[in-house]
Length: 245
Image: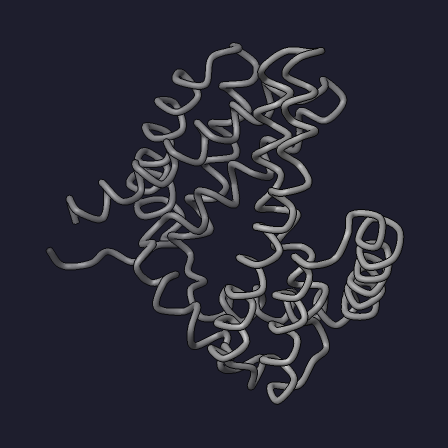
């Protein structure tokens, strides 16, 4: 039982702390989002190992999709070739920014290069069958031999539009899949104790927001969660059955 109380305290305190931080950082019109976030954190962090065990089972329930390692291998190769190409183009511009502006701008510009390469590689490979992966990778390899005008005014716009269109088409299916997945996880892990942790964490987040201190909110949420679990829920309302130690 002592171990269970520790789990309740940690879940409620962590949820209250994160919820308080979110509420304090947001605009005062949206402070209530912090309560929602804190409640979710408290709900899912209570007995977190059960959540981890439920994730693969829920995924197998909602979809038959499995990772395609051939695709990821091809994506990695294509990303490397794209990043090399973008580096050739972006380094001169970064040097120019370094001369006329702050060093942070040049560094940020260079850091965006791998991301640009990944996005281009993803656009190239999206919607392709496995038999086309290697040919697409070869296409990315040839990219380094193209001139900058061809890339900027034809290849990059074409692939960007293709990637955006593919994403738009798959957004509804992705939302449905994500919703079903979350619902399955909740069905597998839901319990009265977990719900209580979520509610108490949200209350702790509210206290942290009102006093303007996330640590106080965390402490209140943890203590209130344990008190609620032991005194109100177990002894008075009999919501949580007593367990033998």
